[in-house]
Image (tube, rainbow, N blue to C red; front, side, top):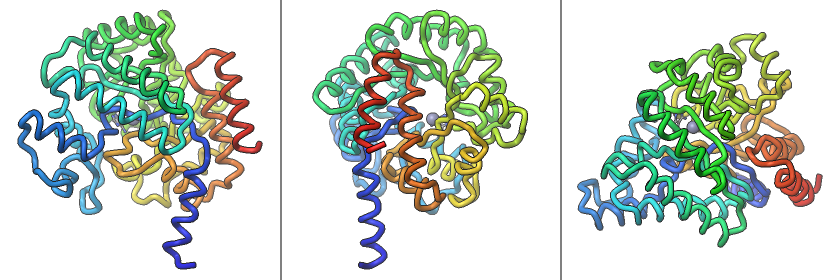
Length: 348
Ligand code: ADE
Ligand code: ZN
């Protein structure tokens, strides 16, 4: 068997595993073919071939791996949200792509402000469109889908408050949580403390991007000041043993996204990613994709990278898949059913 065959055979091993995704952005999940279609239909002037479009919306080997370049891809992606149909389509396709990768449970996060901006769609309409398409696609595919609303740090507190209230109104429709995302290096989370507190009181679960492009201290802030139950990335938690102890004590789940961290310049190489250090420190790590289209990956690739490159034992990976289900933003009965099904399918 050639080396290439071994890789293929091995990736298939991870493809076959039932998966849990806690951290995937809708806006980072668009298919290239769909973007070309939409560009044609709506007269958007972008390069008409897949390869040239890819340089604008996906990380390339020759790109400088910085968070500014990574976030820059969203500027082009924002051009595509031109009609309700487009938003329905990208949501449906994101669910289909997850199902094809054998994801059995997914919390898909979306940024209502980003989706509404190009055409000034009302936020409540955007939310309705994403909800209805996610529900419909989830019924047709073998994947449970819940939604998380995301607000970027550079947005105003007023907008975040609107998003929080709209999301709280739709808890019954599968919106389970609220997230703070975007440029952590330059925008503090302090302006959003009160809003996240209200969102939590209204019944939404809280996850915060922290300790990714900002210091480990932001993980403590997210847990203690914002009420985060889970942390997006949080890989810089290892900066400070007292924060590691806090997160371990609370069993805060870390939504780790290996390739995204590498491509956005958090670590110089895949090999220096601290997934295993976090795991060995007793932190509740889970493995996620972040922006699969921008990173040109699937969740199966991330599982492969965790085990083959970072040397997580496969038994530990299986246990982390169940841990992700246990950290899901769903009620106890639904969670028990999901965990049981995974344990059976993973032969645990
Ligand atoms: N939005 C999309 N991907 C993100 C990331 N990795 N960090 C912060 N905000 C994001
Ligand atoms: Zn993210």
